[in-house]
Image (tube, rainbow, N blue to C red):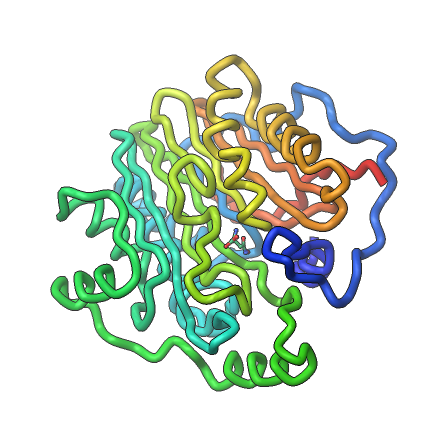
Length: 333
Ligand code: SD4
């Protein structure tokens, strides 16, 4: 799904924030939710899967795997590609700021041992995914936030960088004018990268990195850096990562839910569908105001992807091919 549409379908209702452009036209509901058994990629290993159209990121992760690297190195280096890309306005440098004009980043990483590291609301550091890995590997903690995380980054040799590019500054200034400081959904704010990889040894890792929702309230953190919500890995079972309205993913612990459903025998596709159905059910009427997309992989290298309202893009690098797919979607309208 084009991210423009995806965002038009989202609203910050949980924050009292109203979407200015309304809800995009929905497709018919005839066949959703889909049946249990659909598997979009057949049992491939090694494999990389990531949210949105991120061929350069999946190519980098694949290169790491081809050189015998671990799935952990693959997801970190894959995500770094998007963090460095100033054209991606939802991740790293060039990410859109909060309503006060500050770019604050969230990221987390999880490895085959079930170890996890996260940073939240960090300014001035581009590669927060690497910082999350440092938290995981080099501190006794699992989560660091704000100023403390930033200081830890400098102590580890990370560079201080201005993450607000000219174009994101312009977009923010324009937003302030047209919205009269009433936050609206920014239509370019959906390229958060969540990435899952399986390496030659069959070990699974995952990573997720984002600037969060554009023009969010200062201090707001979404699902992306939160274990079990934006990302969850269980090396015995599989992994899942999310994109979209973080508040809704958090309330259903979306990624953990998908992995647990796979543990109980669901395919990755069926598990993503059930989790999305759960989110829709819990949201009731609010369902029409937001969007969430999930991708998952199991230990066998089967993948799944599902979304609310309309399809979203995701990238898979498997069997030597780097392809972009459209997810299936739930739409009861
Ligand atoms: C968040 N889930 O901060 C993220 C937003 C997102 O693409 O996915 N943007 O809620």
